Length: 146
Image (cartoon, rainbow, N blue to C red):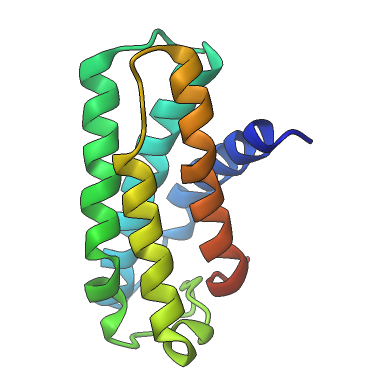
């Protein structure tokens, strides 16, 4: 599967399942993490839809999505600093075992978001690949599939 298609499918899957994951979460720290990740997934979905031509490329909406991703990515280390747990949490214990790598991956997501080029659909298609790769890299190591 081409990298772009894989990244876009992954993003769509994350956005679709996010609403179900929040049901029954009792720990406020875990809920804050889930809300941040849901905001990232929604914003990435907006950009993915534009990249695929599913929706028109809209500069202001693309800029807002990019800003949402970069702002939430910057908050990730603080959101995960407390090792809070909840049965609904998808955070793997490896986060705190390899904190340096985890925070570096959050920083990479922020950098990938800031590097998005949405001057036209082709540029967005190219630059969104790095964003999708940053999400996938972190989820591969630090997310428990429920």
